[in-house]
Length: 96
Image (cartoon, rainbow, N blue to C red; front, side, top):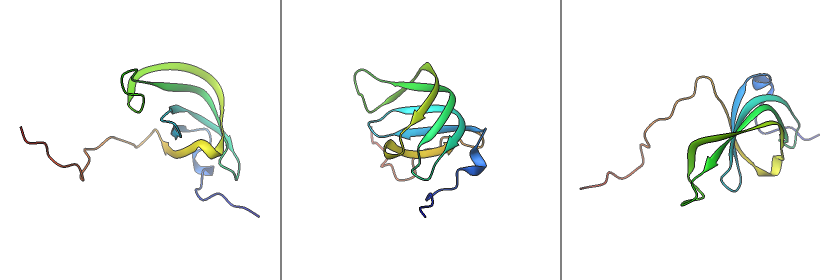
């Protein structure tokens, strides 16, 4: 029997931020998942990418509604509550 590498049970019916292969990012309420990491998100919102740099996500969004994220394309799943962005401690300071 296959088991998921991460425990998603504690995140069901809570907000999650999902990073997908290809640079897409989606946020919504986790409604279900399986051992292959297929995710069902309700009230999902996609963060749109910068037209100049497709790998950079902007603050612009669009509503998607109910979505299924294929497990093979899921890179990261983070809870939306209790998460904050911090400065990169490994970034080299720019002189100038």
